[in-house]
Image (cartoon, rainbow, N blue to C red; front, side):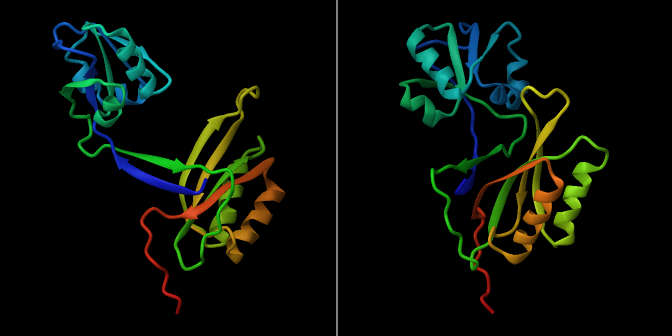
Length: 207
């Protein structure tokens, strides 16, 4: 991971030609847009919802189908890439609908200590009671601020989870290095996924 960005997401109902809402019977999209636009979709209970691995995959299906009965739920910009037209602009359940994206690269980058940075970790704790709390206390003891904590199941290991953490610190800072050393000693596994400038970059006062 070498960067992050947060974008406003505006969903549209996209079609491949002339049609109307009453003609649509199937809508394709990734599960997340369906969730975000559920209030709109509830107005059309007869529509069949078809999940795809991404919104772009949904748009591709609709573009290939060339049918007045199918539509995709996604962004207008994405629809343009597949030659789709906007049938309806949809107001999401939440008026301010944002999605965070991360920037990936083959090589890590060095972030200047004059720029506010984040470090993202992936770790798995033991199964013993209090294992996660013990790991988080390491961050607190080194005055490190955690801005995100997400858990994901470990494939093939029922009931076990791994954790993604965003920490508001440069990877090369002294406190971060001390914390990583301690976390390596008390967690089952740990990996640094990247260090990158925080999205809202404000230069650090060198004094």
